[in-house]
Image 1 (spheres, rainbow over the protein chains, first blue to last red):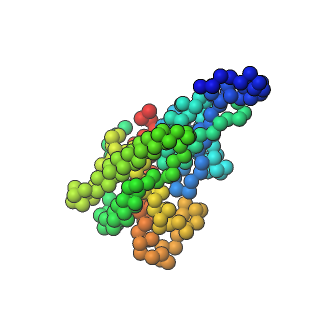
Image 2: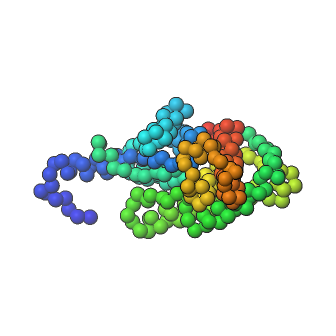
Image 3: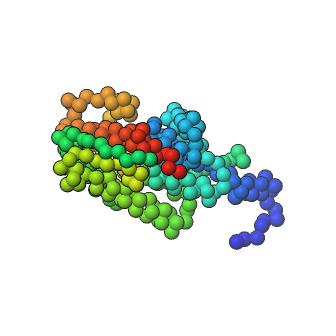
Amino acid sequence: MTAPNPFQSPAESTATTTLLQGGWNVVVLNDPVNLMSYVVMVFRKVFGFDETRARKHMLEVHELGRSVVWTGVREQAEAYVFTLQQWHLSAVLEANDAH
Amino acid sequence: MTRIEVKLNLDAVAPLLDVMKAAADDLGPMLAVDAHVPDHDVELAHSWRTELMSGQRSDLAVLLGMFDSDFFATGVIALDPTNCEPILRACTAIRLRLRAVHLRELDDENLEAGEIDLESMPELQRRAFAAYAFLATLQEVIISHLDPASGG
């Protein structure tokens, strides 16, 4: 590990800190095959969403092409992406720049 | 969750098994969905894909294992809490493969709505579409009767 750069700007430093602490999105992308009921069931099972919240995310995926289904620390986000991929959903990890 | 038995029409389902088995064989060395691995570490990416492959193989074995000699004697498949999740995932894997190989030129909206001109399809494509629809129906039966999402 390298020593912190003393000349790093405050903005860069803040961004680095937040990415490590919890600025990662789990994003599900649309696909033309999976049934709506299947996607809702997977969201309920993996994230513990109720039916209404699971349907909201499913409709976002279907109509907008993507939905951010979870945001948090990287390790947990990676675990969710892996689980969604086990269910054959197109899931990716993205840094949450808004954090 | 409960256990349910589904009586299938052997004459309708048996011809679909070859195309389902071929799709499962196609998936032997590959994932149904190309996995985005969120890490540049080569070793981690390898084990990530290896574990997904292993799960996919295991799920496909559970699905195809339902169509054994007992099935051909009775036409009945049994769905329960131990097999419904692997079967759901395997149905999706095979549907994705059928879509990619046999149904790729079909319009998404028409396919979703089932608005397909079966008469104009070649025999193999017609059977692939029938298998695609059959597997979707099987998924709907599992989701509506066994509620896998409640299993935690």
